[in-house]
Amino acid sequence: MTDRNSSGIQAYPSREVHLGALEIARALPIRRRRMVGPWCFFDRFGPVSFGEERPMDVPPHPHIGLQTVTWLLEGEVRHDDSLGYEAVVRPGGVNVMTAGRGIAHAERTPVENSGRLSGVQLWAALPDADRETDPGFENLAETPAVVQAGGIIRVFSGTLAGATSPARHYSAILGADVTVHPGAALSFDLQPEYEHALFLLEGDCAFEHQPVEAGMLVDLGRDRTAASFISRGGGRVLLIGGPPFPEEILMWWNFVARTREEIAGARANWESHRHFGEVMAYPGPRLEAPDLGRLAPPNPVS
Ligand code: MN
Image 1: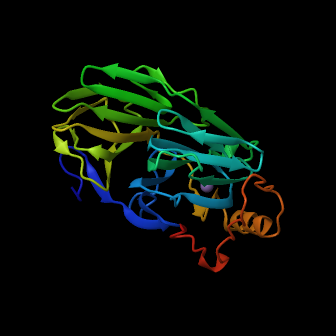
Image 2 (image 1 turned 30 degrees about the vertical axis):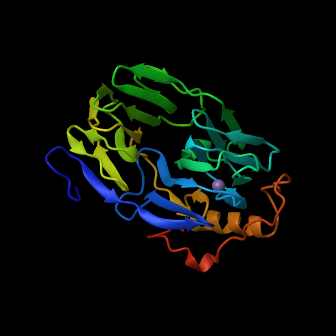
């Protein structure tokens, strides 16, 4: 599924990246697909089993202009930020951090852990009108689930199948985790003004009878009024969407901005310990920003 076929579906391979010891499939941004609705970044990490070592350990680093959404299938991730929030997210719950004009955070596998880690991290770009909003953080221990005969739909961002996540967002958005039981079918309505994409999380799953390939971002395009899934052995897919983002964004490192000057300013603030605050709860050194020389507008992503 590399070319858009008669059903309007196009699939793009994710990129392998490394975050410390953790292997990651980066589904967004990729060269041919920068965003899906307001979603501008999508990392799939795990599943991984571990012993004494802790697979996730991302030291303090800054963000501007976006929200981070951490959603787990297995295990736990501890968040600490420069506002003083500390929270462990577990499967069924969600962490949503609003960077707004600036925040710093660290994410790591906590000392008390299950020895498993599997999840995703997504970023949603903030619209221009809200980019300078106050930073904030929400930890939801539970997200709404819709149970159907053929499976379970969990909604962590936006509304789907009659369920609405209480997580605060700044533009129309959808993020959901769809489980299809073995040998079952599942269907629900979509917002036709949204663009949507799928990513296989576990098992096997077919969308409109076309297999969702592992490691691929499956772009469903716009104008769909419904989605139907089937699975042979049971499967799970992430469904993301939203209205096409109406603004051009510039991404560099952990910043979502509009101009190079903003990026350079945010980088300078971080490097000189201004503006973002410190993550006091993290025991080690923070991340240093990469060299700004790598900022090239046509392909701005680290
Ligand atoms: Mn981060």
